[in-house]
Length: 300
Figure 1 (cartoon, rainbow, N blue to C red):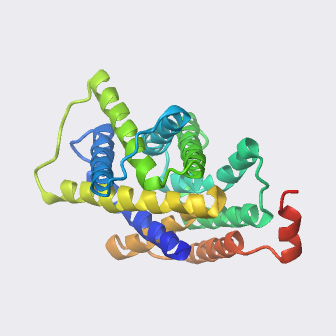
Figure 2: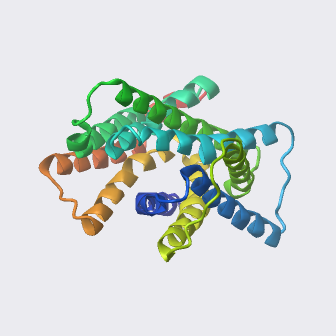
């Protein structure tokens, strides 16, 4: 089951990039994000009502769900979209893929979980592989102020994503399945974005001139959000935030293969080397430690 969920997340999130590209146009970006998560929240709430499993969060659970909504369904997207204004998409992908390492470090700092060495080495290999893959795109950037500002935005978005991962793990430990916490979290993210649009005077718009915008919205809301986030956060609960986050290293590989088919991207020798490093990192992240090491890691 874990392997199926893992492959599902990589496949879905690796193909959402083209839908995000189709969303760019006359509709302001914050409004497009609000449409996406608002629709996804409606679907999840409808499912909860149909199955008679709708729950009302209370106390600290409500605070955690609010935090998850801000981190995963609002602020991280704002950060990455701002980063993309001054950074190449490849560099943004590399920074985002460091979530594997940030998840492990935050779990260590907040929950005191020991960091498995193979997870850190695997994450480092994956990041090195992505640097090789995107080096032609990354090397064109200087070290000027716009690049540093973009890197700051990208890092802030990654930390928001990692924080949301840990909040989801805590919610699952309290008995809240991702399908339920995501419904409320997406509602929080949608409301915050709509309030921002209202206060900032963002013009209300919808691109009804063709099927492309609506098709992209449906793909991002249903496979990308309802299925993708539910499957991913389920993996966070099953595998831990560190191993689950390796999806962020693999889905740029899927995106590049889609680009090779749709936009004529050509694989190069550094690209093939990077792909090999990413695959090697994947093996390390999911390799089971040997029995003596595993015993040594068990708490007393």
